[in-house]
Structure formats: structure tokens, C-alpha cells
Amino acid sequence: MRIQIQLAIDGETKKTDVLEIAEHKLGEMTDDEIEQAIEVKIRTWVDRMVQVEWEVLDE
Image (cartoon, rainbow, N blue to C red):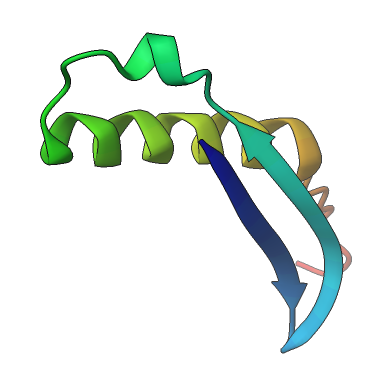
């Protein structure tokens, strides 16, 4: 199964990627289980791609 995802910041696409889940790993999963597997795969991708840094400028 191939899943295309896009990361957009302020409405502008910054990154596009295709994630793959091997069909044999999906096996006999229900639709809900497949959806959960996709969500986990996407969250893992986002965790790798997105970093947020901040600092206090004024108190």
C-alpha cells in the first residue's frame, strides 16, 4: 500500500513524500486496524520531519 502525504506550513506545501506499507504486513487486518497502521506510519514520518525551536525574547 502506498500513501502520499504532504506537509504544508501556512497553506504552502513544503514537503511531499510517499510512504509504503508492505501488503503482507496488512494481512487480515480490519479496515480500522489498517487506518490505525497508516496513522502510526504518518506520525512517525512527521516526528522525523518536523522540528520546532523557540526561545524567549522578552519577559
